[in-house]
Image (cartoon, rainbow, N blue to C red; front, side, top):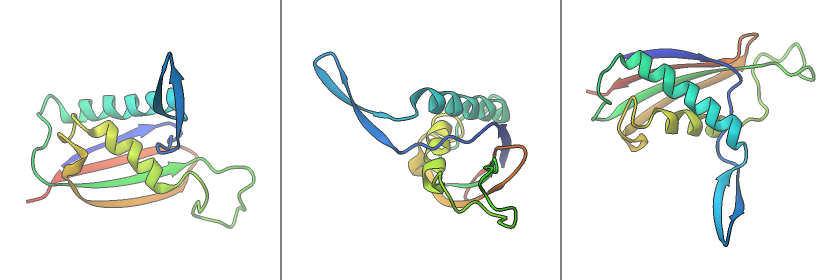
Length: 132
């Protein structure tokens, strides 16, 4: 089993826009710079946790625990963040960052366990293991 944690505000991936580059059009992610930095931090932590091992080749199970910063507008009584960013958008960013590092392709993932909660120390905890 591979386990690591990444500190920082989790950045969602999913919202896209069309950008004109020269005479061509491309689809790009909205939060491009922040998203690239977040995915780089995840990939770096994953490489460190892999300790030189090759990416997993079989089916993979992944558990993600997102710690989100509590916005000032959130009621103190609310324990879980039922607001944006969407959990599936957060998962996409992590899944793509782990491709080629923890597993060869995110198509290998056969099960996900996901959770997000408020925390004073935002980030994500990742567990990944090959399913036997």
